[in-house]
Length: 101
Length: 101
Length: 101
Image (tube, rainbow over all chains, first blue to last red):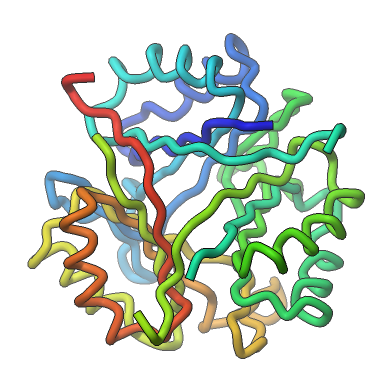
């Protein structure tokens, strides 16, 4: 099955994750969603988000990854794009293994 | 070199990781394998896997990522698909830098 | 906007991350960079990098992910390839949401 994979880049400090996760879970029932915490990162602003053993950051990068049928993802992206800064949502096509394969 | 990238989605609780990792390492000698632990996630069942500082989950999402020549990956997928639930293996094409480039 | 996504695979033990991150941040001002730490992994050598609760590894896999315009990424890859072993840089095309979309 052909799917669209999405990665949304945010940080712990912008408090967007819970709302997006709830929408994907409760409303869209997206097929698979995983959230990863990065150990360092920066965006277009150049502001570095990082942690070290000495300096425990509470504003690390978070990446929300999910995938589903292209039509559903297109609707999800229409919903997410107004909530997330431009340049923070990446998507590409991939194949998902299904029963019939 | 053109390669196929694979991401296999499982959880700590399903105890599939070690067996798959051993197969990729000992039998197929796949070119590159990395395992990531997510901090939250859910699959088609909608069951949420998450951790917080207060509630230390032992069933977090695990993602196994690997890549190699498309022919080898095709053989690896034939081996993995019966072991993993449908809809939990994603793959797409990418370019890998090699000496000759 | 069409972008190229890159993933560079290194380990904590090879001490390459800081230099690459500094170059991407200070010189190229790449649009988005995130670093992830894996919990296990191995490369073409087959040497396993892993951690457990009992055995705290200081040589875990690190993945540096970034994306930008294909022309900029092509220049970045020319700079990175001599510093990183062959077979450790993966890249593919994706779409990035922008204001105008």
